[in-house]
Length: 442
Image (tube, rainbow, N blue to C red; front, top):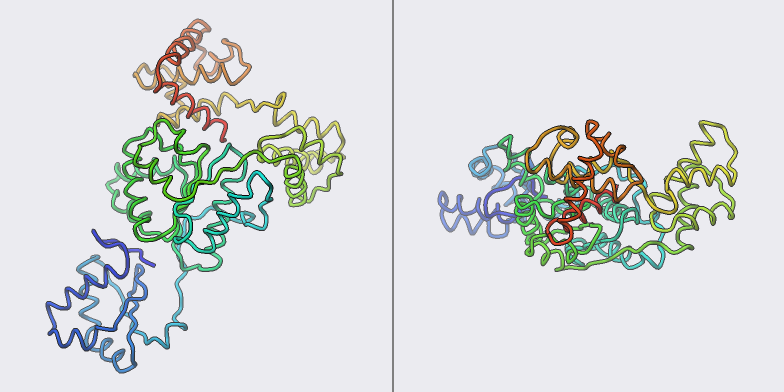
């Protein structure tokens, strides 16, 4: 496991070769061949280098005569102090493993045995299990795509969970596409871009959720391109999720699109009725809610395309029972369903539309709601008004109220301007499509 980084060096073996070059300038060729020919690096983390040699005699000589020189070489490379530990091959199995410090979210529940497998997700599930069993060797990268709420993130975290449980020393990084952009911008502002690169380019497993958020952001795509290359060339595993395949990301850099298609692409489709019923039962059981077969079938028939909505209904029913002390009835089930969907269609809130539009253009929600006439801000505001009109049932007056009480004429003018551009402007079409997809992914 490698935490430190040096230009042109992607593994502990690369760094050991650099150390040997430094030592060769200080020692004779005979000394190098005698003591270091069969000496191999085992691990380099943020505080120690572990070396393995063939005999106890060589172990003692290297530790007593050359450890200080090796420490000095490491300090030259990293400007940091390191311990040097020398072990024999017989001692390797008893070497204590350091647990990697990973930035994984709470993965409780995100396991393969809690993932309901059906005809719509069987292939993606099998691919995820294969990657977890043999990371870096099978299907690299693994690209899982499908609409919001179908289990992509569950599979992504299940891979991380399985590898982390089996090999806790592995360094794992998890990040969402928009967070990658935010962290990159922050690192540039703070002058810590090198630290940002080191954080992601040397991991054993790179989990990226909702990669579609980086499409169209050139500096982010450039950085992600180099991060991808570093991890892939080191033979480490990359897993990516998206709400659509790379080919349908109109503003995605071609070189990234090509790399995403190098490995295996697995889609997840909306679950069939049988799978939805199994998911409903499973979610209810997890929350201690017992539903009749009729209730399970009713919920699963009404909600057809989004697992998160199924989960939302179960949580509503649980709240009715625990907070209101209500008995679960057909009426309460219909009320819970109605709270989640209207006529079978997901209706985003105005707040969601404004938040996702602002995030796409890297603006604040206050900028979008306010009076700024900056070109990018004005265009983002007009797009959000168009989306609010097309995705909700709000009147022009209600939409204007979201933007410091703009009058309905201003709102209508903004909407018509975007509609006119959508007829001929491919870039505008891609932007509106991407933001709409992001809204539906919340």
